[in-house]
Amino acid sequence: MRAWRGQNDWQAQLLSLALLPFSWLFGALVTLRRWLYLVGFFEQQKLPIPVIVVGNVMVGGVGKTPITMALVHHLVTQGWAVGVLSRGYGRKASAAAQRIQSVQQNSTAADVGDEPLLMARNCQVPVFVGPDRVAAGRALLAAHPHVQVLVCDDGLQHWALARDLELCVFDERGLGNGRLLPAGPLRESWPRPSSRTKSFKPASACWVIQTGGKPDAHSLAVQRRLADFAQQANGAQRSLQSWGNSPVQALAGIAKPEVFFAMLRDKGLTL
Image 1 (cartoon, rainbow, N blue to C red):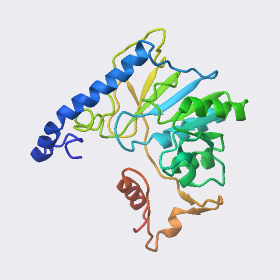
Image 2 (image 1 turned 120 degrees about the vertical axis):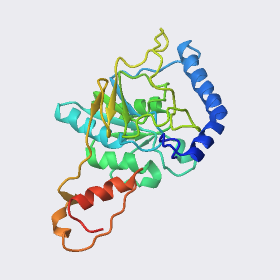
Image 3 (image 1 turned 90 degrees about the horizontal axis):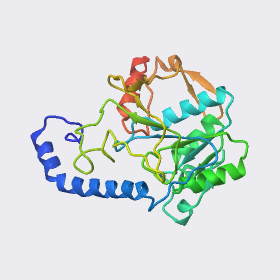
Image 4 (image 1 turned 180 degrees about the horizontal axis):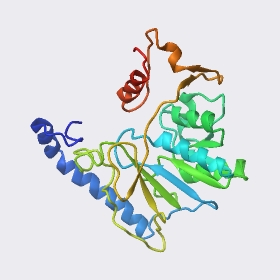
């Protein structure tokens, strides 16, 4: 992981170099798969309404789900009827996890995945999960024909689903050491080669969202911040300041929990 982040650690760098042949093999497979879509051997499926994909090329969490929820909230406030698609990562490893499933308010994280459940409860929009995002999109539209736009959480490399707009999310790590898995943290080479054929049309635009570090001319910067209150599942709220005089315990199920803990400390809480 230290080599992935580009840190100057000779042991980690040596391990990364030793893994380079496997990265070349992984890159060849990624290129072959993309080429098969380019030549029409595999066909992209287009849904009847606009599709926005929020994803990343870095392994691990970079802040996709908060970006997705912020985007959904924005679209809803603009008057759009929004639906969300997700793979449902974290579902039980069974035949049920391969099915298309609607996320209900009383669903469990074991059945639909924790992030889709969070999005359904937080955004109050239809959320469908399934490994086949095209089939999930069709199922969502069949159940909710009023939906006008679909937001796909984590589908940047799901080429079967045609998309109108892509948002690629990075954090302060940027591209790390710039190498593909397993010698580096990248799922695909970045920036992508520009390709457009009759059978394969990339999104009309790909915006880079930077959740940490310094943005450049090709990216938009967003900042993490905490609300001034904590909210329970029943909607009840409590000010963070009310915990200022007593020790509290904090639990985070995110990729970099220390970021959350540091934010709490900055609010004056004693962990």
